[in-house]
Image 1 (cartoon, one colour):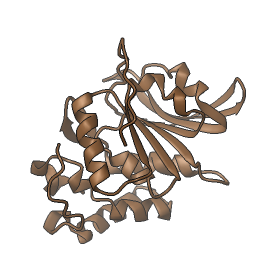
Image 2: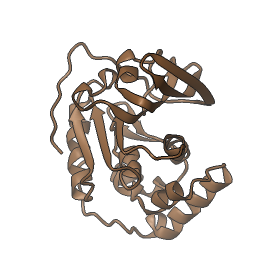
Image 3: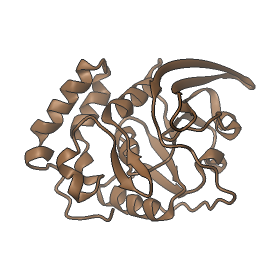
Length: 232
């Protein structure tokens, strides 16, 4: 997935009209955060998938992006983003675990001050980093890293959002939350039951977990070694 001619507006099945239809479907499914819906309507998802799949970019479905990974379904991206923004004050500093195509980071970018995002697959990391930069996202900071370890050098975070599912919540992610911060993460076995959880850090070692709906994500894979490089 390399940067190509960046027709942000799109035509036909990638046009603004098509994006607006997606937003209406998301609203029908219960997404009520208008700020999230507005960002979804403006984000060029067709540039974040393979060119051959661009005509399907505004369907409410996950799509393959290579390397055994997918770009998440727009509904679940909107849902997780809305959960992240709930509260009296929106988070300012957010960590995303699993950059993938960059779609979730691109949605977060206009809504929070700083987005830090980690990806363990180097070719995917490099292609997405270049594309996000070409699209002008200057508050997204990309790292090549094993996501289950989080990003301790930039912690604490007001919120952490995971776009891959571990079988159990990695302790490092909990430790890197600020007091009052929350982790939005799918938890469960690949091919089995996964539940979307919101975990809030109430005090130094006190966490509250609320389970939401069943979801299906690619597994969070823990590497034996990790490389950290800030290149954006």
